[in-house]
Image 1 (cartoon, rainbow, N blue to C red):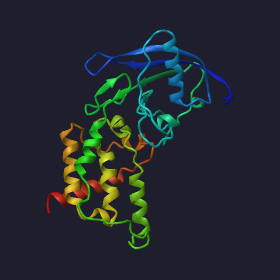
Image 2 (cartoon, helix red, strand yellow):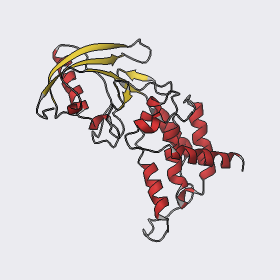
Image 3 (tube, rainbow, N blue to C red):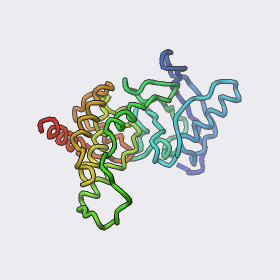
Image 4 (cartoon, helix red, strand yellow):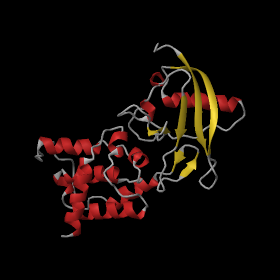
Length: 252
């Protein structure tokens, strides 16, 4: 495709006034969409068009637009964040689409992520899980010298891989059971690899897994859809670490 070309797109966008209202897909047509635009910039253009027509703009979440914050939570053509692997919605560009394409845009679908309006969902359930994990209760003092605490390179790399999770919720949206296991596992695993996380590991895993269950997330059945949809390529091997940590905490 010519990278300077313009697209005409047929959009099917989920519209819902609030969590209690009945939602539906609304049809819109956009012309002269630059292939240089990001997906969110395309939605900005749609909203400018709707405002000029006297209609309500489409509500959608976004913040950094750099694939860091995890706010751009959209299901695009049935796939969380769209078909481009390892890519958040804000990093998806219109050159990945063809002229005349029909694009269906929906919010995350999960009991634990109720719709607030249109494409915006309430993801405070993730915040509650993080809060349940608590903070370290030991006095850490000032920052230690970087070389004073020896951590094996492979352990440090595994912890960094888990810490790459941006909490976007794509794993929940992609999972047929609506499980948050990949998110919770990443947050638990990043501490389990490091000596700083050992002191309160039992309380952390029991509280976080318990809160995940209380909030109504589904169970993990190893479909692997979460890993496939994750824009940061978080591995499902972290779920095995979480389960190991949980069993050790529950029976000790």
